[in-house]
Image 1 (tube, rainbow, N blue to C red):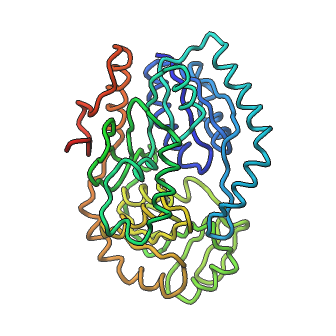
Image 2: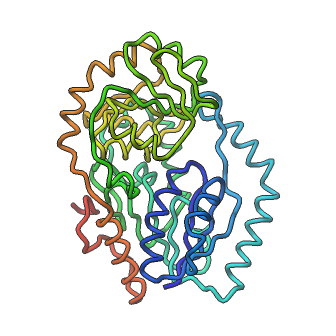
Image 3: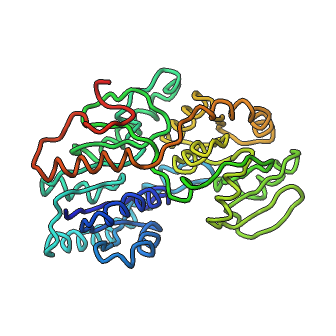
Length: 374
């Protein structure tokens, strides 16, 4: 099958997740054209350069701007409007290239990427959505999860709804499993890279910190007041400052520290949070302010007892969290760690349905973790 695959470039979680699905599709012999923006383009280009049945095209995606640990809505709007003419021109060129070449997609897969989804809608090609963010719009959230977030929740829900509209089916990856409230929606476990699936949990005494929204000169003094070994990733330089080790990002080293950590302190992004939950490592989440999808993840993390969250990080919040790691580990021990077979089997079923010319299913036959009508 010929597949147009769209990957949003904002955050590397989409790229690492898509790499797993793309590997499955490529190994199954499908012909794939990937449209991708941002840092994700280089990552996937390096990953699939040897695959003759995978071609990549770089597009211009939307970019979010931040002020500290807060989403800068005005700044994001200004930046995207400023760069819109160049981005539109580039995307039109790619659009024409996809349309005019002999490559004619039979299916579109979108990881929260609107270019491919729009192409599918325009050409009446079935679109399959695979991402975690559709959870905001297509799952039924209780009052404790939505409490006090009326405007931000509804604004985020509208934006998510518009991002990939009228898909043939939505596969929502998640470590929390509320009821599905919309048809054509299936809830599946998080998509995990091979390194995470193969990692063995060996709890140690150090704490992994991955928090880009707070400068090191503010973060380090907080951590030095506490009697724990902190390993802070994402620093501009490597340095040891008492009980705090600043480290530049290294995949193997980070993974080893993560699987052996006492706990992890990070933002509210889904990818790292789901990896930590899968490894059964307690998490303190500090979601980016005004980015409700991250707060949604953090609220479920707390409700399930897998960790805690705070709007503002300080020494007291960290200390209170670390005092409860035993409690969080007990809750995490009941989390069933799963591989990627469920989501890939669901995708295979959808491709078979599309190939047979069948209407989009309200629910799938493949066993999953939640469907409309359950």
